[in-house]
Image (cartoon, helix red, strand yellow):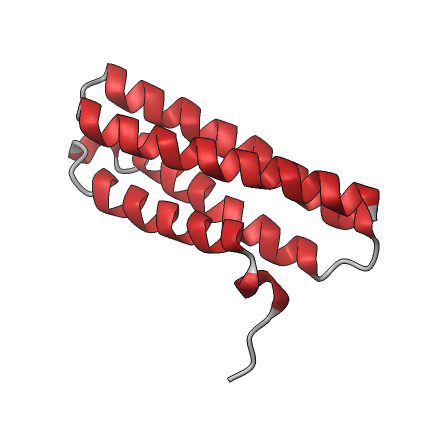
Length: 120
């Protein structure tokens, strides 16, 4: 089976894992959040990996970096949703800290990737 370039990116792999964790955690949220916070969190986490995948198909490094920037911005959106989820007591302190650490790692990798794309 052919492996596409985005699938080889550690940051893409980590973003997929984050998305899976967000799906699992949000399945415990109140039913009245199904079309609110749950939907937003799931779409945003999916968007991180999707933007990385889309960006790798672009021809110029500037275009690639643009999609990496979007992925970074979406990562910050996910962090915001996770903070709110903790404040609303939808997630535990432990889950919050674990997710926050993963977001920190992903954001650092995205910054490094963007710098590399712009410097090539």
